[in-house]
Length: 91
Image 1 (cartoon, rainbow, N blue to C red):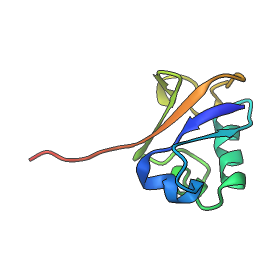
Image 2 (image 1 turned 135 degrees about the vertical axis):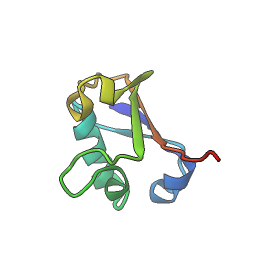
Image 3 (image 1 turned 30 degrees about the horizontal axis):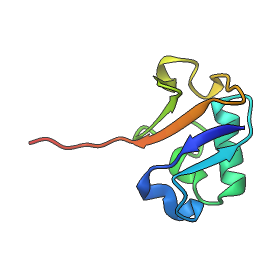
């Protein structure tokens, strides 16, 4: 199972755990299984078409999945996914 790092704003869905594990052969499968284990978190990550939301970044190990195969990026047993909400700001 992949280890998934959960950002602080989403930890209310994971009983305040900063890391959880979820099965899946692709990033998309891991995220869908994360929703099964922690209901409500999926709608924060994926839109109604099943695509990754614009303001959510997911890193597979150290690489942004948008520059890999997006939700079809393969996931191995000991891989790490990090969910990082986009931060806007500036002046």
